[in-house]
Image (tube, rainbow, N blue to C red; front, side):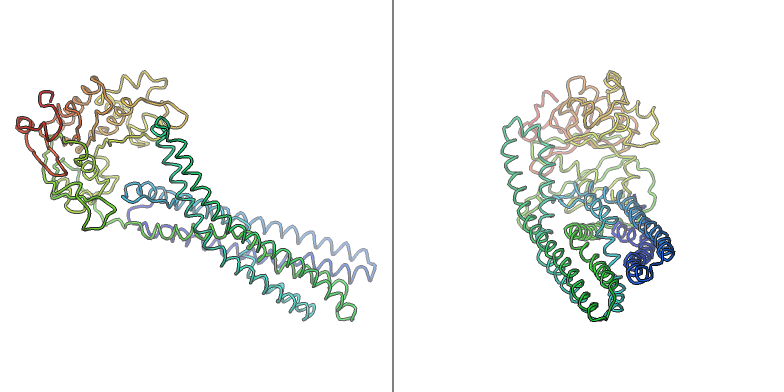
Length: 574
């Protein structure tokens, strides 16, 4: 992960810049490889014109010994340039991967869904670097060398090779022009399809019982077929150009042999020059042919490269920060307003409208109200997972943005309404994946959340693995482990969004005890409540209705008023 002083937008650019020296070395070895590629044709020329005419066996042996040494160096240099590109791809991934993952993860906080996946694009670029197309691009500058050798053999052969090269280049440009849009569109559709597939799998728990699985699969099949059709059009054209280029190159070699035979009959070149010129001309066209043959990968890598540049360039720049003192828990919410996203500015109704309240350290407020009153939106804004359109949230007088995520996270606890633990052990999840976490602090958090005994009943206790093909927890167990994660380290500022939606009576008691423990240690707690048991341990209540504050104050005063039609909570049960 890049440090805070390095702008996110420059990470990819700087990572490529640091590969410049590697590319220079690859270019050097490519020069050696392309020069040594003349070994075979030159050996053949010498055998035809010198050895066969003289009948000298020692000359043949000496030439062959030289050829063996040169081919050994050719293999070594070719290996070294491939290895350099492979290592360059690895270093690029290591330099950009953490930042790409961070950008992808943070994109989930955006109101607009993001289908661009920087990790997938980075994988495409990483796979392209050591591939044959990249090697072909390093060989392209050496085409004039082979053309020059062919001109030395005979000027007619040289011009025929140039004409053939022009035709092959024209085919390559036509290939790029006719397939570019189709390949780019197909890759964009593939990103949307992948997003849909991920959504389908994540929501299988509701899609299958509701009988939607077949219809969702039909929708995916429609998207998939459309993407394949667009990609196939570009693929068909690219395959046509590839076949045409290959056939023309074979025709050109035969034409060179025919012209060479004619020139040999005219006593203008030797028999050995015929074969040598044909091989060298074929080598001149080989890099172009290699690039055309890999054109689909070239386009994919180019599009992935552009998307990586764009996503890093568009990434929000982190403001300069200083090391803030540890917060004490004074929370001020001033004029927070959030509109429904996606509509034009004048047509967006507010989700939250001018929310104002203040809490002191040790306060716990229960935010109650009917469904769609804005409780979860307020929770996300209070922890910085969503930005308000107007207004601000301040902790100890400073906005949340004045802390870095890492610094603020040590003092903030958050239990979202939709909770999913990350693949890893239960200890890892409670400790927020801190490798230096103290086991005693992990156990203390579990005890506060009332989940310690439950964890000990699992096969591996705190080392029980969660995630794919591992132990699965019930909704209540999951929520209580999430509560333990929220209170880990006894943060001074805690936001719990409907923390008891999956809890039984024992879980409710544990939640109340956790809130009281936090308050006793001076923490500020905000609880979004839909069930009355969630606010048993709070000292203040905030009633939301239609995105606005209907009531706010001490719990006893607010609950003495008529909150039944506003909050939907039975007063006698609170």
